[in-house]
Image (cartoon, rainbow, N blue to C red):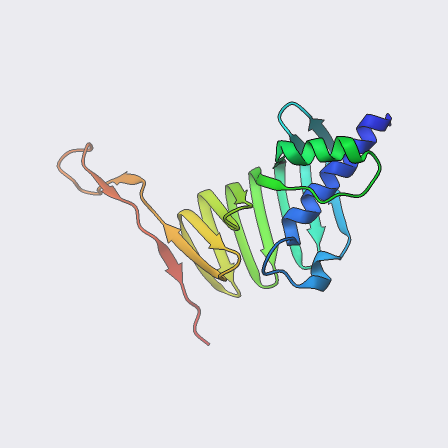
Length: 187
C-alpha cells in the first residue's frame, strides 16, 4: 500500500469512528472503543472529500453496527486540509454526512432499523432511513416511507407520504396517501 493510500485509509477509519459514536450525547467509554470495518473494497477520493466502502460492508464500534452494500463517508474540506498538513499526526475529522445504500441495517442495543437507503447528518445528529424503512424495538415494529431518528433526543419520527392507488376506486388514477404501520406485541 502506498503512503497516500494508507493515509486515506487512516482518514477513512478516523471519519467513521468519529461518526459512529463521536459528538454530543455519546458515552465517553463507547467513543474510545476500537472500530472494525470489513468490506470488499475501499476507495478514498480527495476531490469529493469522501471514502467509499463497497461490498458486504460491516462496521462495528461498541454496541453500534451498520451493515450495507455500500457506505460513503463525506467529510469537510477543512478536515482534509488539516489531514494533509498533519501528515502522520492524529487529528479529529469532521464528518458532514454518511450515506449507505443497499440492504441497510443499523443496530444499537435492542433498536434495529432497516431500509434500502440511510443518511446520517452530522450537524443535525439525525439518521434518516428511506425506501422501505422499518424499525424494531424488541418485538415492536414500525414502518413508513421515512424514519428519522434524532440521536441526541432519543426519539424518532415515522412519515408516510407516497400516494397509493385506492382499492376499489372508480378510476385507477385516484390516489390516497400511504399510512404508517405499527405492531405492538402484548405480553
